[in-house]
Length: 124
Figure 1 (cartoon, rainbow, N blue to C red):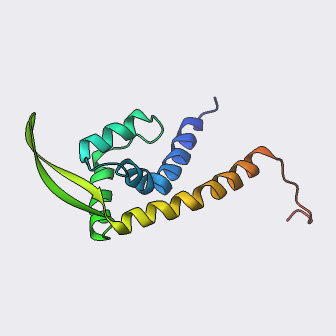
Figure 2 (cartoon, rainbow, N blue to C red):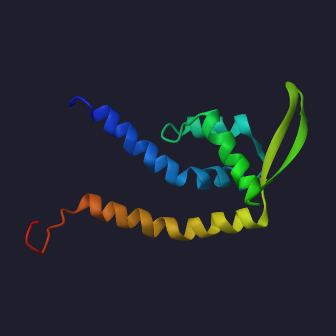
Figure 3 (cartoon, rainbow, N blue to C red):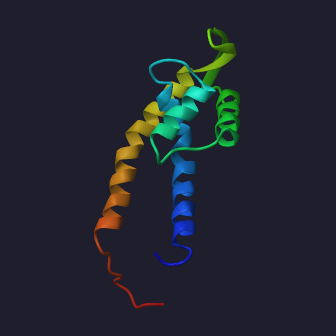
């Protein structure tokens, strides 16, 4: 591996994660409300989408301000009450729209990565 390759890979992964994290978090709430640490654990379990509290909690606050999620407090048998996040109708609609768009986006990127493309014009 060339010097700096791991930094470049980390930067590329961070940019990809930034673009899809919001929708992955919404998808994790599709079937039931979730609390913050539970969301962090699910993202960590994926390997590729592991992130920090410093990323997820501001994202959850923005999703709440944008009316994509709502929150409720629930007692916990293993500690203090937990704030649970659940999809609103707007959040569900945003997730459904992303779900429709994602396959075409993914296929387009896969196509660019899999097939060498040649320029038809003169090089600059």
